[in-house]
Length: 345
Ligand code: DAH
Image 1 (tube, rainbow, N blue to C red):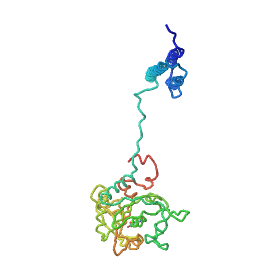
Image 2: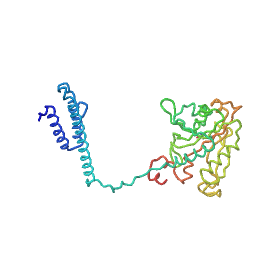
Image 3: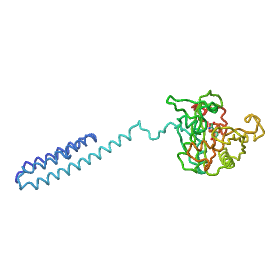
């Protein structure tokens, strides 16, 4: 019997050695590094092929086949070992008594929308359905946009009606949402209709019905022919939808520099149905929102020709409306951040 060549002895030895190492790998990580060492690009088994030039030519074919067989065998041994290790790992996890699949989480405390956001969303939906854009304008305004453009020059006594938070840079925190009127006139091509809800700020002492930060919704409709009748009708639709019943409204004259004529809109008291009670101070009516036909100077400031375009506008006290809808007695509760109050909604 002819003797086995050296390389054959070496490869047979290698098979045994790798098999033992693989069977003794105790973790998946150890097996992985073994795999790299045996079969990786720079691994020992592929490296054997580099020895072909030193093998006698008549043995080269057999040598190549032996190396390939070694490679296949090692790969199969690694797969088998990997299956064993994975099985063992799963078994350990299943036996781990600290893992309790029946355990439930502590109950989650879910939040909800703030009543101001709820009512604001209702208003936005109603106006959106009537073809209004819903716009968001900056809380920091220039003196010009907040006052001058709205026909309230520096000497005007109306400035004192709205005590102002001034900023160091000469700008201010908007005292009302009305500056959005002129912004919208510049932004949209007439005719258009839009509402702009948002926070407004007044530098004044707070009490049950006054807060330094509160919410308004401004509404503006620009068209060629706009009437008080249309204003009234839109307001009745809006208020009936929000308060979820037919409401009766009336207009009284009111003065605001940016509308002419200007009105105070009253709503029939919802508490006493107009008979007179403490909520309406025995009047049977509640003052709800100011409104009017847009002043020609404001149209001009917005780049519109008052000979061609007209408009109506209103400024709804959103905070006030929320208080009416939910019977909230003190405006300071709305922005106070007290969860005992907020969690009731
Ligand atoms: N901006 C006024 C305020 O905050 C409210 C107001 C009055 C708005 C009449 C209007 C309006 O659009 O027509 O006091």
